[in-house]
Image (cartoon, rainbow, N blue to C red):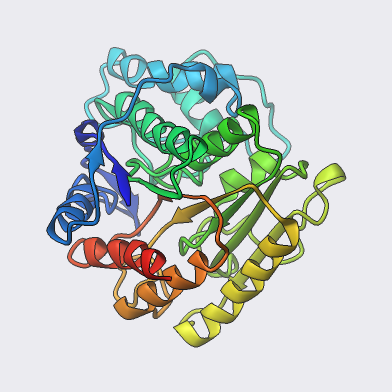
Length: 342
């Protein structure tokens, strides 16, 4: 299997994350991607290719232009204020408040943020843009006939909505890739999100559409980030009604229960009959992930990779979460090797 990867992901190297009332070293760090690519090379999964540059137009097909321009300039604007730390949202347009976009960077950051854990740092935009190019290069190859490609994106993307960042995500790599497939001749795309956290951004982008089906297996939002989206009764709206599937699961969920949800999702994908499958691949379902509460083991990733392969669809894997640095390489590559053997 081909892997698309760029060292430009290291440009995103934030030092602070607001968690539990403290500023800590962020869980989303460069070692995540480097450990995965090291494992890919160790097991000889396949060639590792650099991405092409697709410019901004594919991003504008999914994200609000003002939001994208904000991302491009946020660190510069934050730095110009003289603030000493990294850019952290501090004020939001909460219920019954104005939704006008302020001029000051504090206001803009709060307007476009969904959460406060994701700080801006030097190189954030450059890394996020590079991650999009990784996903689009993978999509281009699958569209040209590759049966499966792994887009090793960092930062991740599935929490990024049309005009919101958060959850370590700035641009929605999987959604941009899905739109690329639609714009290049495909009629139907399924996005299967196996990250522990619900991909609120991907759901937001495609919620009223019937050409992209979104299916997410995740921690119950009553107990897990992003808390305010990902419930089972969210099934789409308008023309998208019936094309959104959420599978929220309780703390302590082990593989035998998790895989039942996966099998149901796979059957819904078969019924949908997509031309392309995108897998938002998060391995934070692992039993020792520091910010999750599922109990999957390393061999389980091999097993479900093989299950996904039985769909026999051209497949683009897009990297999302996974924060056990010591095991992220093994678990990610297990999914891909399971897929290849399936």
